Image (cartoon, rainbow, N blue to C red; front, top):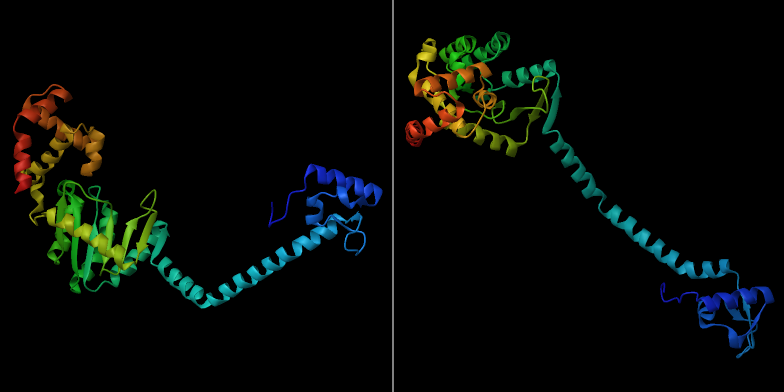
Length: 326
């Protein structure tokens, strides 16, 4: 039943077919559904007509649908009034969303990324924070960074940079660190580091984009996101080890070599492969394998499984835990 209307029953449909063929029907055999739907109406205006005649379905449809369409028109008019009522708010909201979208920009291509970084760094007035994972960088990139960083440091901007411990054995990076440290920069290293990050004056930050980070970067200007990224940086900075200006000692620095070994030991016991250790340390697979070889040689291990057992029983793990707790 639709809107109080009965269904057209099979008997009613049969009577209606008969009425169409005959032209009329006795009132006594007209079904209630035909009367209610208006498919059969009295042939005369007499109070109790004896005969009913069929009505074309198109006329019945028009009569029954008319109030429904009128109601739809009323609802449509009301909906349009609501839209007009909220037009000012809609325009304001759209403008605000457009501004928010401008807080995040995807940069594609090395040239565009380099130009955006150079412009932001040049406009830095208070502090520049950078995190550079993955070990030492190429001499070309370091030379470019040096041209950008030295004028900034001389202008009084504080610069703090995080690297992984592996850069302590990378001469080009150490040369760069020596130059910027002499100009007032602070550099620390960590065993493991989050992704590349650059923050300028807490106003703009740069993150790697999807895929190859050399050709894809994201420029962020949302205050809440930048505040979060700074907290991530500060947490790592507090755990990092200052990079001494006396850099040429390289591998002979027992403190840092010990810290690298601590990471290797933890990862070996956890079942990491040489490839996994290399990625986490930001070094080559060959360097990671050399760390493992030295540990094996020191403990007299002849297999990976034996090395894990010897590390666990040698007391080196406990010593590592005590040093980390200090």
